[in-house]
Image (cartoon, rainbow, N blue to C red; front, side, top):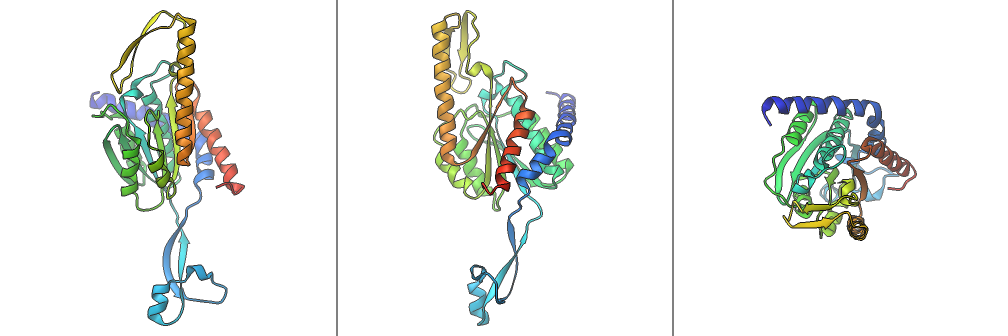
Length: 296
C-alpha cells in the first residue's frame, strides 16, 4: 500500500466511523463507560462519621492521630483496543474480511473514546506483540491509531491471546477499559485473561465469517488453515460433509464461548455478513441497563 493509498483509506475510515459515532454510538458508549473509578487526592484528619476503612494507618502512626485518605472521581478513562492481526483475519466471504471488520470496529471505539475525552491506546498482536501505542487523548492521536490499524503488516501468523493479555497487564498501571478484538482462534488463555479482568474492564469482541460455520452447496472446495498451513479438500456438494462441517463449527464455537466465559468477561459476536453497528449499539445498551440496575 502506497502512502497515498494509505491516506485515502484512513480518510474514508475516519469519515465513516466519525459519522457512526455521532449518529449511533456516542451516547451508548458514554452510558456504559461513564463510571470513572476513584483516585487518591490527599489525606486529612479523621472526622466523626468518616469511613474507618479510609484511615491511612502509616500517616496516622507518624502523626499520632488518625488521618483518612481522600479520593476524587477520575475525570477520564483509559481505553485500549487490543486487535488480533493473525493470518486467520484475512479470511472473508461477505461484506469484508474479518480483519477489515476488526479494523472498522476498533476505529469506531477509538473515536468514541476520543469524543468522550478519554485516552485511547492500541495493541496489535498475533503470536507475538506487533505494536503498542500508549494511550493518549486527541483527534491527532486517534488518527495515528487509525493509521497503525490500516497499515498493519504483522510478522506473526498465529494467535497468542495469553501473551497479549500479559503484556497489557504489565504496561497498564491504572484501571482501563480493554476491548479485545479477535476471532479467538486460540486456546488456554482463560486463566490469565481472568486475572486481568479482575483489575480492568475487559470486553471481548469476536469477529467471524458466515463460511466458517456453513459450507455452500457447491463441489470440491480447497480449504487451508492460514495459521497452521494445514490444507484439506472438502466435497461441499455432499450433504453429509456439509452437515459434519456445520457440527464441527458449532462445537468450536461452543468451545470459544465456554473458554471466554471462564475468563469472566463478556463477549460480543460480530459477523462480516451482518450489520455490526446495530449489534454494537444493542450490546452497549444492554450493558448500560445492567449497570444502572447494579448488575456490575
